[in-house]
Length: 161
Image (cartoon, rainbow, N blue to C red):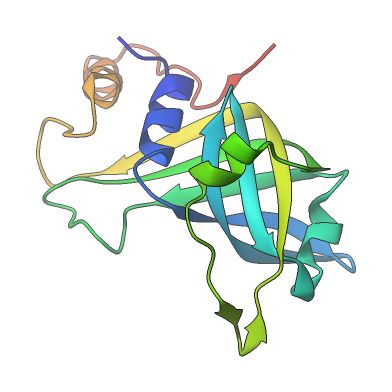
């Protein structure tokens, strides 16, 4: 049976893009990024021209992804969120290939990639479903069963050592 953290990684691998949350000039900010999972870290590719990576590097950030726009509640929707330290990296050629082709342009400007890595300390999964049994995995069904029997629910977040 997968842990919540394992399920979060499994679901994250099902989508290509997510949003990194950080603060920029003391205000909360979201930026889109392409992601891949490598050795327990989340590698991000962003457009360098916006400068958003500068607010992320060296900070604790949140990174989230979901299937809310591609699935219905009836079929099972999910969101995942990771929180951890973010740093600028130079990916290996093999890691760079995992991202696939980059866009040519972003808002009319030539796309210039910059790469970041998040080392998650916490992972959270939330599911939305119109069915009694959760389709995302047995983890969600077990959590629903514990709540239904009055058993104490487990923490929603897991912390990595």
